[in-house]
Image: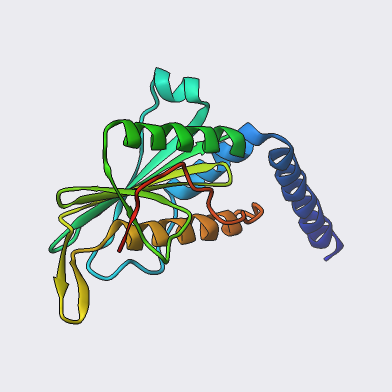
Length: 203
């Protein structure tokens, strides 16, 4: 019995030591989070979308220069619309915020029509035709969500949206990210950091 207890104690200490090493190494923590996102399980999925396929995105020279440690893509099919979530994991939050700001400047330069979701106030969102996207930096992770096949119409009861909006998908993506962080004992982050945006239209 003492040998069993001693063995469990050694195992516990080893696990704690490994966690401490990851906590002190931002790059190792970023890789750990990337793997956790890649193998994560979803408890809920936004209504109108189906179970996703989750894949690792291949890195390139541009992502390496930006400081991205790992990228994960989540594709969610749907009946009337489909969505995609892309997580880019950095070693630190400063690089993630910088990447988000640069992405926002790109949206401005390409004259994308900005939209605003009251329930996702810290995201920078845009729409072109029936396609919407939202971006936000949450801690050391840049999150991009894309919703295709979304249409809005004004009715007597207010504005009706057909398909699953990027706001709904973005809300889900950030909540899932926090759940994954908790599952591997990484500290939770504060609210997502918005990118610079102007001329937003409320949805």
